[in-house]
Image (cartoon, rainbow, N blue to C red; front, side, top):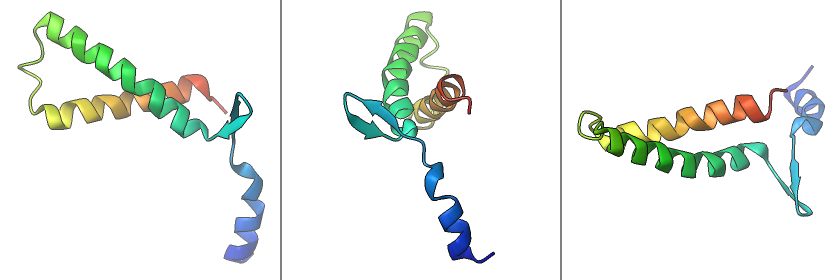
Length: 79
């Protein structure tokens, strides 16, 4: 099977979610959902006083956003 044939087999594997008539890839949806959740977790960390030990923030919070994105993907789209 050539690469072209393999690509043709995978052509229908792109899952889409319809939101008010517009089709969106699920990975965009979970990334957008994870962003406010990350902000809430950051506020919770500040409330607990964990903001200072979690440095550098430039690495911690994007990693937290990625973690929440991956968890949201596994929860919302288990296929």
